[in-house]
Image (cartoon, rainbow, N blue to C red; front, top):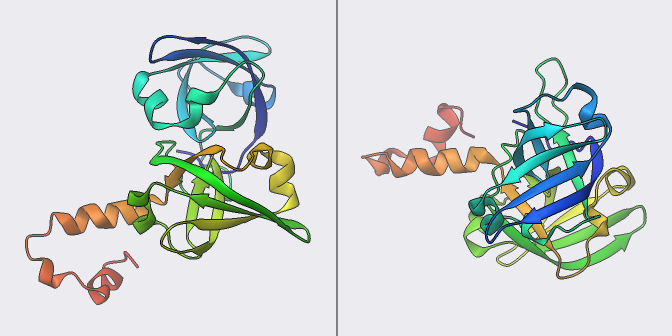
Amino acid sequence: MFTGIVEEIGKVKSIKKGSTSAKIIIKAKKILEDINLGDSISTNGVCLTVTDFNEDSFSVDVMPETIRKSSLRNLKKESKVNLERALSLNKRLGGHIVSGHIDGVGHIKNIKREENAVWLSIKPPRELLKYIIDKGSIAIDGVSLTIAYVDNDIFKVSIIPHTKDETILLDKTIGGEVNLECDMLAKYIEKLTSFNTNKDNISKEFLMKNGFL
């Protein structure tokens, strides 16, 4: 599990692509401070397993399903990536609970500056819109952000200077792809209600009473 608070911007040192998979070596510094084989590292929001490491980089294998479902397929040598180590229980949870399992790939539709902030407008896959709510949380390329606007087509987030400096989000251009992970609470509620045999009992009051809202 992760928090969506990026710790470091890494850089792809090398990438060896198969027909539908890849082996990537990523140059990093902070991430390597306490790294071990088998550790989970969020890489642009995708949970990847460390298969090897040395003093300046670590290696990961990317399976075909991950290539199909994420924007990691666009990586090349020298590409920058957002990196975060798995959540440690002795630290504050600054973002929100992020699993590193991507729900889909969105496309940047607009970038607009407003004083010290930058607005990103993103078009998600249509099936994800039901999980995206105003003032809710979403992970974009592994960055925990608050949804500031949503309609039937796009949603918007506002990027503060710190997030601009500490992540690669504003390195993207209009039309660029981003990995999206919706707040898992909405998905759990959907699953719970789909298995209820007496759906007439599911109401806003029921969900509030049982701690889901």
